[in-house]
Each structure stands twice: as C-alpha cells, then as structure tokens.
Length: 409
Image (tube, rainbow, N blue to C red; front, side, top):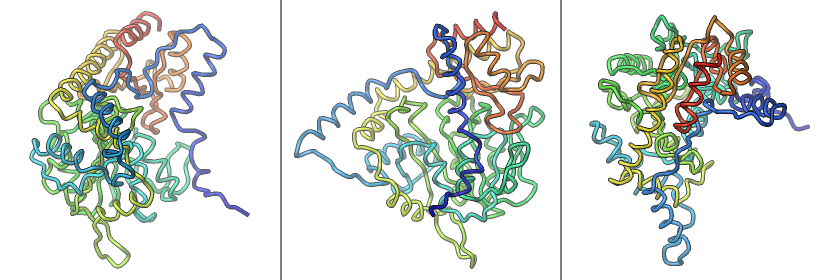
C-alpha cells in the first residue's frame, strides 16, 4: 500500500494564488463580459528588454550550429553569468564573492522553497507575519512545522508579527530559532529596513548560530538611501546568511525563468555532534542531484542585463513599474485609505476599510469595480484586515483600476 506524505495534508486547501485564480474564473464564468483588471499576482506586463532578446536570439542560433552547440550545462550555472552578477550586483557595494558561491537557478521561488531541504527537520524556524506563503508551505511539506491551529499558524513555527505599531518590521524572536526567513524589500508589505536594523538580525544569527534565508528579489526597486540592497553589505553576514535574487521582476523573466542564490562558504549548519558543515557544498550536492540547470539561451539573455544597453533598459522598466506604484499609492491615499509600501518596492499594502475581512474586501473589489488584488489573510494571520496591490500592470490598467476604486467603492 502506497502511503502519502501526510505533511501535505496539513497544507491549506490550495496555494493562495491558485485560490485567487479559482475565484476570478468562477466570477468570469458568471459574468463573461466583465473587464477584470488584475493587480493581484506579481506577474510583469512589460516585455523582455531588447538587449536580452538579441542575446537570446544569438544563443539560440549558436545552439543550431554543430561547432557552437551546447548540451548539459553546469547545474550551478555558467561562469560567464556568475561573473557578471558579482561584477555588477555585489562588487560595487563592497561585497566580494567567489564564482562558486553563486548558484544560477530557475527562480527565487524554487530556491527559497528548496533550500530548507539541507536543514534537519528538528530546526526551529521563524517567519515574519504576514509572509510570502512559499517559506511556510515548503517547510510544512518537509515535516518541520507540526500541526496548524485555528488561526492558521503552525505550532512549531515562530511567527514574528509585522504590525502598524512596529512599522511593519518583524521583531527579534523571543526565544532561540535556527532558521530565519527575511524578505526586504518585503513581499507583501513593500516595507524595508535600514542597515542598522539589518545588523541586529545578523548579530542575533551570529550569537545563536542561526541561518538567515534572505529574499532580496526586489532589491532593484530600492529608491531611498540607507536601505541595504544585500545582506552581505552587513559585517559578519557571510557567516550566517544565504541570499536569493531573481531576474523575474527586474528584467521580465517571469516566463523565461532565471534567478540566483548566494551561498558563502563561511555559512554553516551543525550535525548532531556539534560539528560545523558549510552549506555551500551541501547546496551544490543538492542541485547537482535534483536540478539540471537553466538553459544556455536564458542564461545568455540574463548576462545581457548587465550590458550598458541592458542596464538602461532594465532601469526604464523598473521606473515604469515604480511610477505605477506612485499612482496607486497616491490614488489610494487621496481616497482615504491607509497605505504602506510602494516607495522602495512594487507592492502596496493597504488597510481594508471598516476593519473588513480581507477576503470580503477581495470579493467586494472584484464584484463592484472588477479589480483583483491579494487578500492579506493569505499571507498569514497578521495580514488579516489588509490587502496587497501590485504595480506590475500596464500604465493604462493601473490608472483605470485606481479610478474605479476611487469612484466605485
């Protein structure tokens, strides 16, 4: 008799964004002529930069010639891309990395979900609340979290509430934890922390021999000075942190898939005898066993992001989305909503009116003005009463959506 992994049975009925899609499809089935504007899922709408397209075309042509054809590539990525990442994303910020500390992957979502595999299931993990669901769900699947309570929280997870009172920034755990998920600029709230605030986390991790799993997928959207783009800008972070980044929201790779994870050789975890083990070779071992690498044409396209033309084109795309964020934030504030984020991130986190439940607000928004967002409750119990909108729509749809909300609700 085949036995199911019963940890999967502890998960919510469906992934948050699958549930949103289900509700939208049901509504459209009953209202086929409705013009739905989607500001929910964080998918981009602007095309790949021309520099990327040209590089991909060239790479595909190479794959069609015997003398330049490439088969299996290195599972951790081609060095030509890793070197560009180090040269452009880290060295200018005073961060030195070795090529074999950069791992190219098919997405930050995949890596943040999969990295927990190299930790023992008895590790105690901490997450901010609200939180990107993948951090929690992947640990539930692994059997690390225990059972869920009536609030939708798992008994073995330490939840760090992000509230209006603490500026939507997670407090340090009250008890020792082993694995800490941090995301800045934050998804879903759009908030950031300063270098001094991030140093507190690094110091905590060093003192407790914890590991910080730092999701920096939105660092390219940071506009204000004093906000760290990488955790490795903080002294000592190489000893305790892994960083995840992505080309999806910066250069439009949501459909072509490319990201990278930084695993310094100094960051360690410990066995039952207290012996330290570097996570770098363990992650390499995991990737070489379970992952065949990102395709050569996609990696060639990603490398083109770092050309002069590519940098200019990517910056124009980010500027486009951040103008959308400004429009959303300004429009909501003028309509009387309390708003967070949208300054250093493409996400706007708003308080629902009249303490309305977030799924109720989702339904109201969809039915009355035909705009789709993301209910805060889907990100955790402290997301209840809040709602996320994204800046990734087209300019026309962004302006139309905000006008609908201002005049129709």
